[in-house]
Amino acid sequence: MTTPFVHRNLPRLLLQARESVMAHTRPSLREHGLSDQQWRVLRVLGEHGTVETGRVAREAFILGPSLTGVLARMERDGLVQRERDPADQRRTVVEATPRGLKLVEKLSRTVEAHYEWMEQSLGKRKLEQLYQLLDEVIELEQP
Image (cartoon, rainbow, N blue to C red; front, side):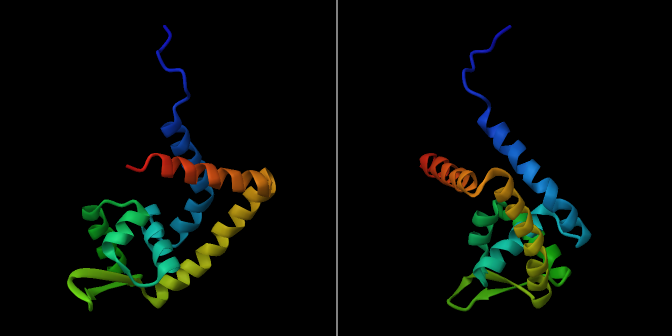
């Protein structure tokens, strides 16, 4: 039986590509007791410093209720600290602790080494095209 689908399953391919890339990073994360979600939070904080929790949720692609639990565990483990936003007491901001920043620095070397390998394997031009196409798909699908 044939299906009415003409195009390949893009969401599945994107997930498969994500899993292929993460397969290289996950062992390092696990060595340091981090989940994928915790790493995404640390990466956001490593890139931006102190960040409002809503922005962390958006940039790390973690739903708010789930982020609350992730941040609680990370705070317990001494990786982040949360406090009320001094400019707006209704909001909470989060930042990486020195321990969290040390992990970002250490793990970023592993991540960057993998990206360098990808660049060597695919070629700089193809990797740049991949980034550009992904940016275009993201922009195209924005409401």
